[in-house]
Length: 289
Image (cartoon, rainbow, N blue to C red; front, side):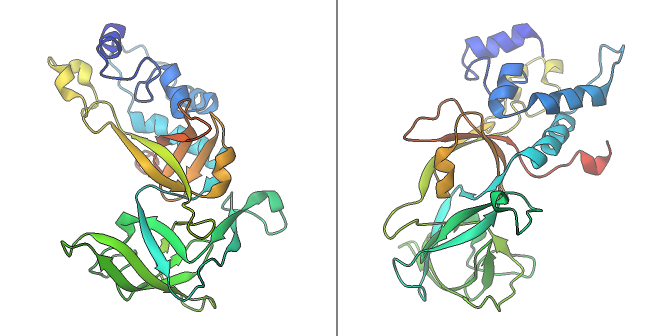
């Protein structure tokens, strides 16, 4: 896209400045958490062409970003849209500190490859990881069904507390299997109350998608109508595991099952803000490099 059109987007506040993470400017890419290493790898991969009409697909860049962050971004647990789960057979106020892996290939004798997460009788899972009706191809939680909380224990849903509309789920009651003999297929990420009655670390998460709906909006006469109204979603009430409170601007993480994220410059001592760099799903490598 031409500089004139980019300037129009910035000047007329269709985006949040030249470093808006949705723009393919260097400042925007940097704020989104894209590393110089992955950009250089992308440039080397596409090579040089004499054609003025060549179009490079965005997922090719995202492939190189994932390749880099998979090696450098430690894993952590964050729940974007929390649903409360009360574990009824675990004493209130009882806290266990469990080992969680920063890296998928962490060795047991490498203490730096692990971090501690609290586990209590109140945990939060993604609201999308629960449904009232189970099915064979569904691996989330449902009434009477068990799932494994990653790095923790299997839990079985015993009751769902509904709102007055009999549809909205307010709270889940569950029992945990301390022996870990239950072997459910589904594995969920979660965040627990660090102590009785204390909410987990609250963070803001910004999810970014493509700024335009088509691959090449510059070809369109009315290119402004091609702007994606869902290119930015702000989640104010996400919950994170406690160790993230020490994160600083520019730090990068993989939120397990959610994608790669970086700490944004809008963060304050009272509230961390994370930008999603890319999702975990990689469509480019499936189609060939």
